[in-house]
Image (cartoon, rainbow, N blue to C red; front, side, top):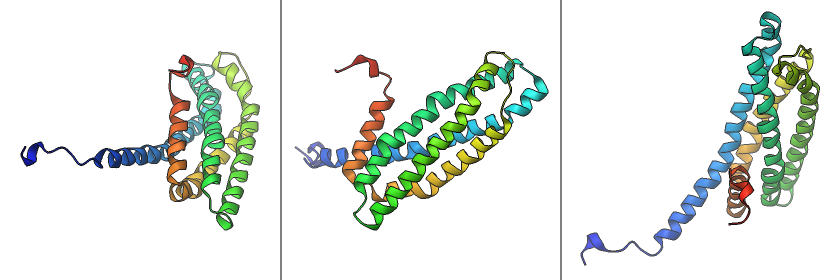
Length: 197
């Protein structure tokens, strides 16, 4: 047996597995950033919708935009909040060192959850009119609530990007990172309805 046919060292699969696990954990954290990009894009489309409605009425483009924003918020934004609160925040709390770090994480989580509820309350004010417009029915849009939702959400996403996700990348222990990646993968699988394999 020459050097070219020697088997790889037995440690290689374990190293590869650990490296792959780290990759998926990093990817899980990065996925929250990508969600923020899509949410901010949707917020900016929502911001101009009242003007488009005033200029063009209930044309096909306005109705399609209303449907798209409505579906995105109900399906993606609310799910994003739930993923953070059920998966990311508990992982952060579990990984935080006792003392100042745990206190910081606790205050960040309390702030973000409070902001989620505020954003969802603003959405509840906008949602009925947006749904009607998507169906081609006249409805007022609360422009003040829309602007408040958009500006608040952009600030919320920026705060998470600048303060929370870098903290997660720094303090999440390897087991919590792996558990977070697995939990997000399970939540996002298209085969949830199949039950146990």
